[in-house]
Image (cartoon, rainbow, N blue to C red; front, side, top):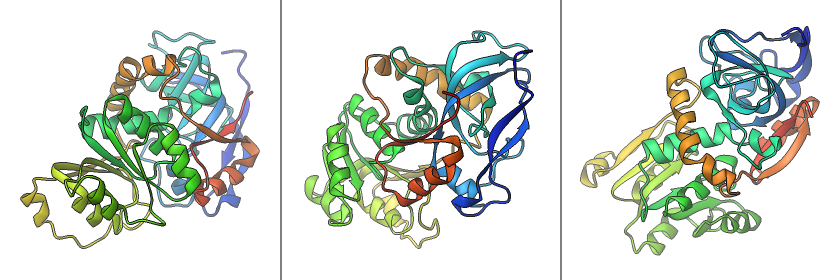
Length: 334
């Protein structure tokens, strides 16, 4: 503990606004509470919830650190009381309750995972937020099984590319939507069976054509708005729609009779508001089921761009442009 700095650099976003409101500020170095570890951050992942929080549309839950950043990789710098299985110097990646856009961040020990063997700290920083989210919603809530068909919207995003690879590893037939020819090629290269350019083709029509109007068993959606009704109509008998975000409006008028007629399930979840025990459970599931794939060089995240911590506004601008294919990172302590 004596070697820790007194102050650290972090990204401040004030009361929120456009990307330009973010700036580098200084604060006291965090101290890990009981059950926490302190991470010296190498890289932090940039995610849609960060953009929403910065914009004032996604306030952190009570008790969470108000700083931006939900995932990080780095080195264990200190351990709090009662923490076992972690030692100073261990390589780590973690789902954070805020504060990853900083030189140090304190994280509940149950939300931290060892960096998979063979992976660098850059790739490791792209794991927690997306892999926790995909496992929770595709595998647990969505109950994906081998041989089923899944439609993944936003296939070229970090979430989308993770979901495609995880679903393929589970033996599913993967449909996905993207917005350009480059993105079609990118998702096909990681295993998507059917890549639909939504700017050129109506995904509902294309799913109906490919499946001979049978539909898909599971849909992972973060768009909402007019997609909701089209998603429901694209589901097979007993199909499941899992909503994880709303890039468009969450308020639409739907004829819900189709849920009864075709015995559909419409569910969803958010990650940040889950309990510490829930998040620790997800971490344990990932370590058991997904880390072995990563250590064999499979199911890896794709890093599109890396920005310095001071260039967080540029990273957010890229995220908001939706031009990226894969993950965006901030380089902090390397």
